[in-house]
Image (cartoon, rainbow, N blue to C red; front, side, top):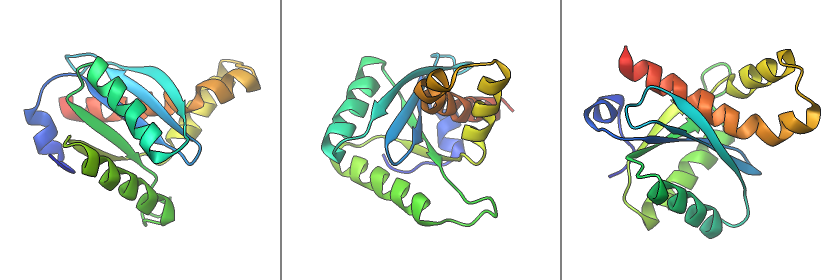
Length: 150
């Protein structure tokens, strides 16, 4: 497979895996098989690429995932900076190891929206830190799921 378009994603079926890629962590979320609801799954503490990829592939296989939704950290003005290139490089390297469909989704403001929600819920700083990445992945994935239904 490779980097795919929304139309291809609409043609496929099955659960999707949302990824909020950070420099230190990968937040993961999963959809149900009907693609209605995104649920936070886990946060992977990044180590070496090979270990990160192996963990991601393990989650992918164990949950019968049909595609990755990769958050793309676009700048507020819509431009693509070094973080976008880093995420694209990460995906290129994943595709060298395994053929799978990857869809990029603009993740601007996802972490901020999730953090705001946690603050409103009066969540402790420690709990926010533990949960922000997987919740951001869920926010990203839910955005795609909502778009697929529209």
